[in-house]
View 1 (cartoon, rainbow, N blue to C red):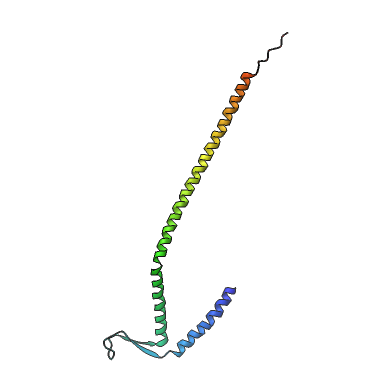
View 2 (tube, rainbow, N blue to C red; view 1 turned 60 degrees about the horizontal axis):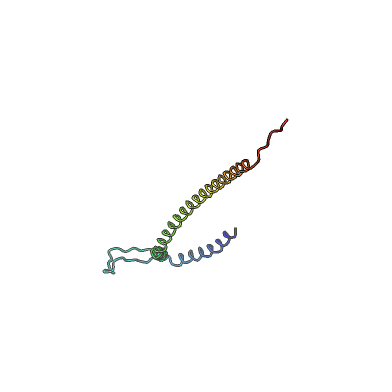
Length: 138
């Protein structure tokens, strides 16, 4: 809601200024695209002054935007490269984690098997060292 109010507070005065500018500069201006003959140009157009100014401002914004975009090409290329490196490293990390989990599970299984073998050996040793109980004599 606050954003709409701020937008209206900014856009309404700006629109009023643009409309006042257009009304004040509505007389025609001849624009010639022939630099060699100013008296009889090959192509000339008569447009309102505000249209000429708006077109030139829009062209200036477009040319400035294109220049900024071209200037930032190095940074976009570096960002793409770093993004690719980041994705590759994340995949490698995932593979290492999976391998670690697998190795941990194997180690746990081997440890459990070793415990079982040790317990079985201990039971066998205990049975071997325990004196046999003689049956009762009648």
